[in-house]
View 1 (cartoon, helix red, strand yellow):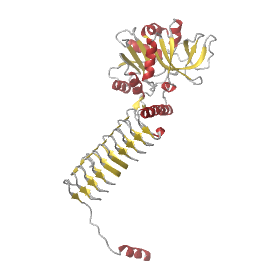
View 2: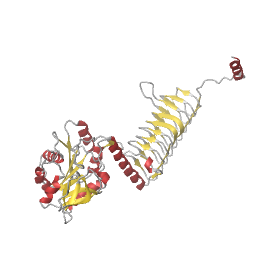
View 3: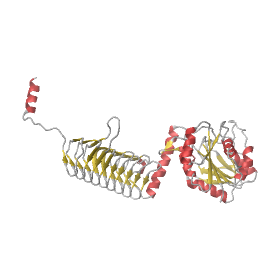
View 4: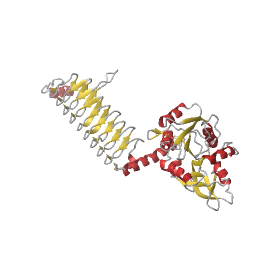
Length: 449
């Protein structure tokens, strides 16, 4: 099997011929840009990985190690361009990289897809010496232009700076996406020949194509989507990346049998897992770590994060499900209900205006409107346990730690401070007093004042 070395440049200068240190830890759908790039690459068979990072970037290297624990780190102390960065990566390994395939990716272009990586490597396996990732858009400013000779061979990448194109070459509208794959034995002798003879005085990896063509090496184009070349150096560009990635997630969900009634209004995390038959209404936000089982329904304007939702459960509208929540089969969490760090068993109903925090609620229990589990005493959190088929009446406060036994009833408006035995009725409210005629007398006094 061919050995593959994947080099990821954290300081990404490749897709446009500039030199900006990227904000590789900016999040897209809850995951850093760098992590997206690494995740796209990490399942490549028989590959090893090298991250080229600026010096003293512990957060960047820690993120890389989190995604790919065995990734090697090479430090580019004095940045001199992408070709210099690749050379730093190859020199950082104990054995020379003169065999196999080498693939170069960028930490600030996170939308590269596994399928594109596979196509680039497959192109090398099909007797190409070099594979250049490109998209076709004649009027895409800022991207390097792939130039071809009369035979249709890609022999150079020109900067988009208005410079005239030599008469023996033509611009066919293909733009450089920045990603490149090449046989190691072809790259090793060419890298030192890349000079810094340009206004920026940097060694550009894009110059490799002309050097390879001059040696008679074949450089083949591999088509990708333009979105795969997008990077982010400001908040507007980051929002553009988010929009593209969200659309990918929505399309994937619907292909897998998830019903989105208004797809453009639903926002997912990179790790959201919804099974076939889940239905999601408009304006729902999924934070990290959400799983929902088959047939679950998420109604509009709900926010869910770090939660497990079992099959057939119903959430919202206007529900907030926070980390640590486990919603059982066919449970019903209604409007303006908040659940945090709590396990709700099968068939539990909390239909409106309740807070359930640090609780265990048994099967078929009913939580009335306005019920609060008072879990925090100002210093520590405490647990509330409610048994199977218990009924907690509206506007009740359960002062944790407390237990409500199976089948017990709590009368509406109660403040429960002590455990309630199974099948008991608990009432804890002030006695009602009615003074006949008081209101009429009060209004009369007020009118005469």
